Length: 214
Image (cartoon, rainbow, N blue to C red):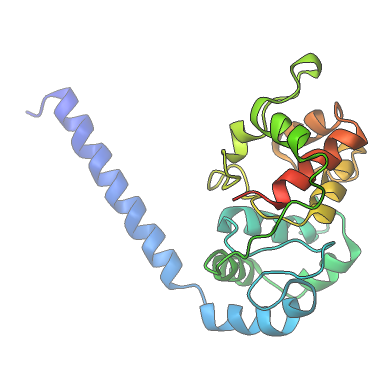
């Protein structure tokens, strides 16, 4: 008879192998050619075909974690008669004809594109932005942004998005939307709670620093 510890190890290994196989099979089923076509026709005007938007108000999607991209696409759409979790009339129209498989493939496609980096928008406040990014604002209970998004803004797959090199205008707008509770699809209200404690000046500084992150 197998000892309990050895049995547990073997079962864990089997579960891991089965999970990996399932993930590989799921990835193989994604219609990446269709996703590329969607990116080149539906997404191109606002985000560019490779996800490197040149419009500051629209986010860069290239190299973003597929889990995060899928969640956002999913949240923009109304499902089973329920209101969309993330309200945006433009994006609601864009995702209306996409099903879950389309969204997963599109998320995977953009995640594989190379991100183009930029420079900080306002060097006058980049030092303040850097401080908030690395150390937070202790007096207000604002945690360091790097704690979740990483020192270089690469984020953590399936949990926290990549923000490295994101447009200043987009980041600033999203932080203010979180603060005003106009965007409410953040897990456990985490970003809403943080942004609520930040002033316009502090948000501006962080957004500027993020745009120049390497």
